[in-house]
Image (cartoon, rainbow, N blue to C red; front, side, top):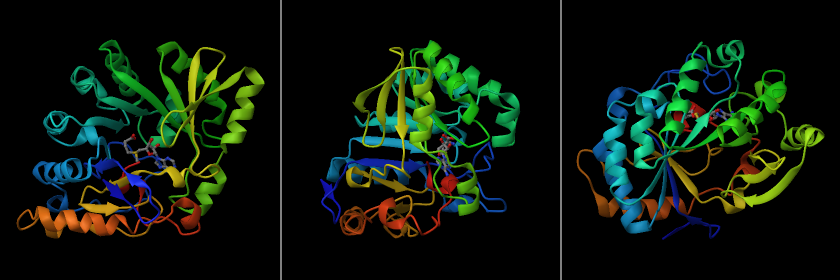
Length: 317
Ligand code: SAM
């Protein structure tokens, strides 16, 4: 097992499989930032080698694939099959544009999908993401659900953009029978952008409570607190800014170019490449991970005044 310097057990690995994305959300991607050179991106063999170490040596059981947009990575289905065959719980975070292509496959593999969906309005979708692709997302969602897939909607609430859609989104989730999680906008692309769009959990909750009953159900995961709205829709809140969950953080991240990032708000990444290229060195990698995890910062509570060096698109949300 892996423990950091604060005694927190680390048992959740998030791997970004690409830094490419087919959307350009204004709050996620800074203009003019170059992608990693292709030869820097971890190969599937390298990803598997890392995952094997985490699973076999450190008993990591939960794995999330993210990006960039993970479904854009060529051959992602074969990587998913290989990871699932290891007995890991594999989940995926996606913008859903390509979900229609993988819906049946992902549902059959039992992959839990977190679908990022900030709006149901075509114009707003284009404003947020730069593209008029909402119909692809809705189609993917339908196909995934009709194949029996397990899905949650993740919505970043942005003042003056989609905060008037909170009920439309709750209604939509209710009709589809899925949980919706409202995510507080985190300070990633610049403090000015952040402060003009930020809406707190308390604000979202008080608007919801004006319309109906919110009953606390419990902690859905280490990050989300889940409520039941009007006895019919599960609503989660992920509130990194106003209710940071650093003390129960159990996760570390690996960027698509092979760096361990210990906290989203840390400005350091620790490259694993020297243990992968020119040849795999499992023993040295294992020792490196044990030492590096000890450096995991306490979290947002200590680092919030530093602007994150990594963009979300590179880090994986
Ligand atoms: N492309 C995939 C997707 O859209 O789900 C995975 C990567 S994306 C970076 C993951 C999530 O991070 C998305 O739900 C996105 O809305 C969220 N995100 C990006 N920037 C954010 C920020 N500053 N605060 C909160 N969430 C953010």
